[in-house]
Length: 267
Image 1 (cartoon, one colour):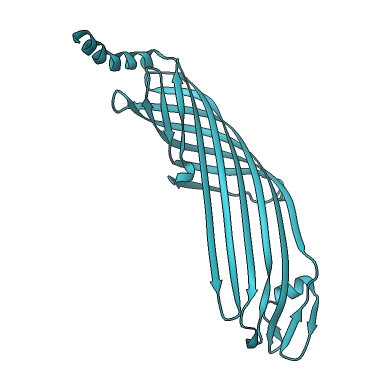
Image 2 (cartoon, rainbow, N blue to C red):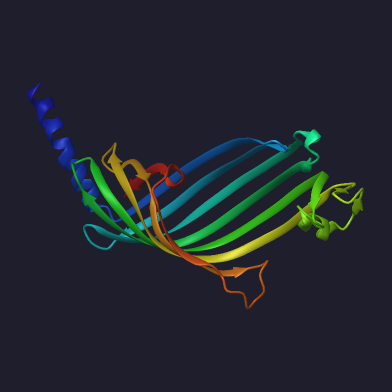
């Protein structure tokens, strides 16, 4: 029994010695986020049934080399895939009012992939023998590719007062207007309106990502990353002209969509 107690006492110290003597660390992370929103908006003239949903999957792989007791440098790769769908259905309301409004269905789907090589500097701070807090300073280059498809089937009628029709933007775009009398116009549309496009962009990100490591064995354990503080600058967008002013901005986000859980191995 005394020998067993001595072994149990030396295990935490041996674990720390093994981690301190390790020169390399490999880590992986996985994240998944799913959101669905529903909305129903009734009114005297029209009711709109709307839903949208989006899911994202992330995977990351990183390799570090120790520069000092707490500082490491490394490289990594992040892959993200996302799928977003939107559906809107506008139904006629009270037709006795003389104003039915623009009705119809709208559906869209967007699929995207992002490939992101990155360079990292990590700082480790041990809290206990088993738990450490880490912070990654990273520079990431994003290759983003997406495909968008939408389909719209409009119909209905709109009210005209004093010669100025409500919803004239739709009439001016499609032009197929039939005037029934001096107070009402009816727009008739046959067929569907489709929109399809591809997009690819290049972006640079610089940020900080915190994480927590929990040692399960002497040189391996669980790693949980949460939140980002980063600056992003878009460098290229295939759907914009070369002289367009591309977007940039800073964000701070600690929501579930930024969480990743994985494993690390020190050797």
